[in-house]
Image (cartoon, rainbow, N blue to C red; front, side):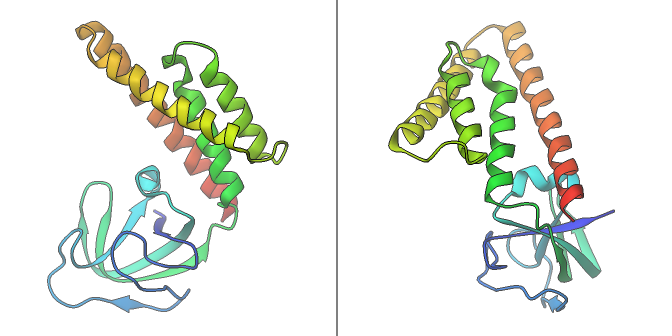
Length: 184
């Protein structure tokens, strides 16, 4: 089973702590392991979607480990190999694919238009502009409002919405696993 460490740009911790990780160097904490307070947090492939940031690194750990749902908390860890294919462009394209998965929940053509502009920008076929930013913001707002409105519907509509979100998340997790496996 592959294990990953998610980091901010420059190999910097991004979910607590201020350390900069060096590939191959082991790091160890003392004291009791406590999720979100003491220990190094790593994730499995199926957890990547919850933790995405600028850098994805393969990691290893030794010794004590706590499985805390969508993360592992370990005493001793190191990063070994960066997922070089995970970069700003691939992250943007992945985000566009995720948006495409739920675009059908947003009434009107605006969502699809924004997705097309975002994909063109990520593919370097369009330049960034205030209009693109505004369109993305409007689409995010429309998605939030559509999700909220769907939440006020009856049990059948809520079940359909929940099933759609679950299916989209499962597809996004599979897409991310494939993307990460290709870039290591």
